[in-house]
Length: 76
Image (cartoon, rainbow, N blue to C red):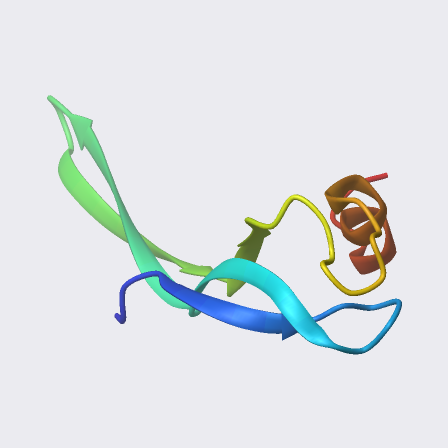
């Protein structure tokens, strides 16, 4: 798996690439359960790609991080 990467994303309001985000690719994560009687079992779960907005606001149009995350569907 590639590590987290900082990328520049376009603003959903003005379309200019001014927003800095932390992005990670989809990957598989292991979950190990342990039981004294049955031994241990490892299950794999597919994790989706994701990102977190690092910018406080768009430097072009001035929209805040809260407004941008709401537009992207990250906040309700």
